[in-house]
Image 1 (tube, rainbow, N blue to C red):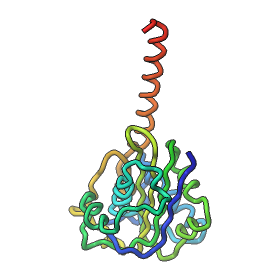
Image 2 (cartoon, helix red, strand yellow; image 1 turned 90 degrees about the vertical axis):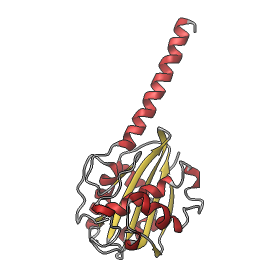
Image 3 (cartoon, rainbow, N blue to C red; image 1 turned 45 degrees about the horizontal axis):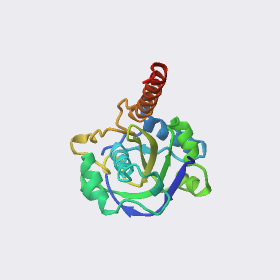
Image 4 (cartoon, one colour; image 1 turned 180 degrees about the vertical axis):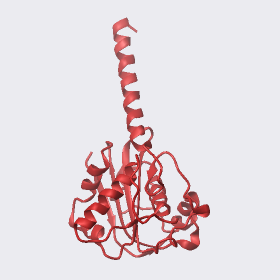
Length: 220
């Protein structure tokens, strides 16, 4: 299934978790996606963006609002704006009073899991996505990735904001709530659940195939 892109660049008011000045890349595909994004920005003479875990957690909740419906991506369907303050922020432990404007979004969905570098390349498939990436109004970024039902489709979401460091997307207690399945950037934790979902799905396929083969062998 080809990557489906839904890109929106508009000044909606939203959210806010204290953020890291630089992305600490861990065994986390969302961290790796942000690292690729920032490396591309700096190579383009643009400043690196602060990886905000509160914003990233909300990106993951944004994905989950699609309930695994890959076809809904790109069909002008999106979660209601009210869900950011009423649902996404509380689910992440983000204080509603620290919500900041969203200055851009990138959302993609595909049937198979790919490496973060490949996901980044697929998200950067047209001129509009590049305009969003290099926009000078961005100051913060957050990424989320997750699969559905123990396998595909796999969603990748990047949210951008112009919030201020340490005052936007602020989580209660200073730590955004970890939500599984799925991974979000900036949490400085190892998270391979998106890839684990792919592996689990493959294991089920292997198990089913082996069972069928055994059935034929023994005349079941």
